[in-house]
Image (cartoon, rainbow, N blue to C red):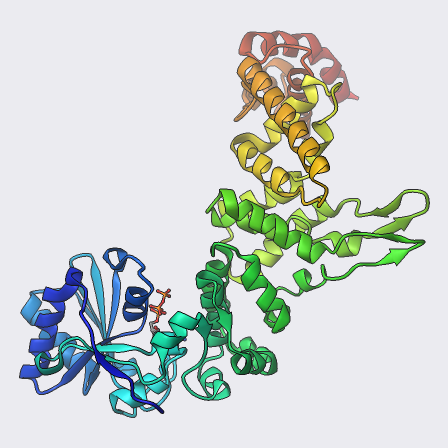
Length: 479
Ligand code: CTP
């Protein structure tokens, strides 16, 4: 282990707070250090002002120091986690997390209690990555001293993700760190050191002991990184992807029959994801890109004279979305429904590019997509991944036309967020029947008449239409 000590300036932003904490520790005869993400982000020139979580490590009891700091700062909100030896002080908009230096692994979310106290160096070497193991001393005698025993600063400069000690030990302590290594590489556009990467490949299966919620947190950070394909490429290479989303691994590969090949749907999916990432930071739109072709493998067929087809992959993929979300620990609410909708509809705008497309087809898409129509168009445009620039331009122009048509039809007919102007109650009254599946049928008939432009989208026209058709249904009901 190499000691790399140099005096640096701590940023002004929190220097009053840091000095106070240093003084409190000094008076208690303790040493205190800022550690982890805050120090890393400072050297990455990330904006420190936006940081809300600051981690402190003390040689001694983290809980005791937190209590003293809270008293001095008059911060009333303090949470103590005895079995982890940590305490959190809420101070203004900040969450100050105190932990006693440990000899054993640093595991914030583990249920296993951590008992053995250690020195600062013991603590640093059990952290996940060299770039997360740097600290600044806050005691007055050494205020601002950088303690960087594993060359974290160098790794930041060289853009390397590396564990402080033998990667297998680091990953054995907490297998989530394998995912964290890739997450940081993807977020920061760093590369993963060979030895670290090899260990991940060897130990990928250990991810199975990690909760899906912790995995989802890291995966979502990869999805939200500037060029998410970078992270997914590493996830595939290390076989971590196989652990939590094997359906995506099945997209890899190209088949050839009679000289005809289809594209590799894994790399295509990543291109679509990167294309979406260029124009949107929305996590769920990015998930829709990841899952849009997920059901291509089981729907793949080779048809003589036609070539490769993937009929129904949109509907089947949409059907899979709830199961995948549940397994991945993603929310089972309207966000899942949104992703499901985009997966289901992702081919629909392509069917609308022809000149002769009717207003009715546009109305139906508007009705089904509702407020998601713009996001659906972003996904469709991102889905154009041809290498042929002429083709790309042509497809984009087609979508320009579809968007113009959508706008025209929406202005005219107000179909987006459409609700049937006639209620079930009114239909029951008019038909003189009670609740029955018939009511749904009549409602659909009115909807179809509006979508097909047979009648205008307003109450009077719809009511009039109901009066006209009601006898047909009365008969059906009686027969
Ligand atoms: N840490 C670790 N192993 C983990 C999680 C965290 O060693 N599995 C250590 C690292 O030193 C990390 C610090 O705990 O820097 C704080 O962790 P956390 O708040 O989760 O992450 P940050 O590094 O602050 O980064 P981010 O805010 O981007 O998640």
